[in-house]
Length: 243
Image (cartoon, rainbow, N blue to C red):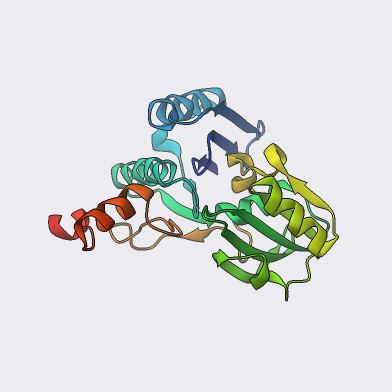
């Protein structure tokens, strides 16, 4: 099998490809750091990874893309690209997994560990999810990704905390749970980690209805909120209007 993964939910863009069941089976991973580069760099990275694997788009059997919550623009770039590739290659199986779960994989938890993952949701809030890691066979979602505050997480009992948020919030959570902490760049999701969720029970989920598939933003983009506050009404859905 030849599989490709796209991770576009943070300022660090990454693409990874893997060949399985072949004499030269291997994984190739390439990254580009910096905001606002995703749209221009994603397809060139895809081309580079495939060339290093010695494969073409027509040979891909599985495509994975990280879901949110995450960067609104990054999510749009990743999902639009994945939809375009899947539409152009009807036999391509498409999968997705929350970038919070991908971050938990990056943290390399011990087998059976309960991992609490939190990222910034701005306005003093967090996006949070909790998983029990039983890799390589299974991941159990204990708390699905959702908005949270430090106070709302008091009932959690993690073995490991993965945090990408303002220092004050991270320090507060570190004191609250007193467990090993992964923070900063080490907590960012990668396409290579996303690839490992393919075929794992509770890991990457197959997308069955491509037309209706949309990313989990977590909350509306700031530009949308400003527009709605200025106009006193909800922003029309351009997708709905197009239909």
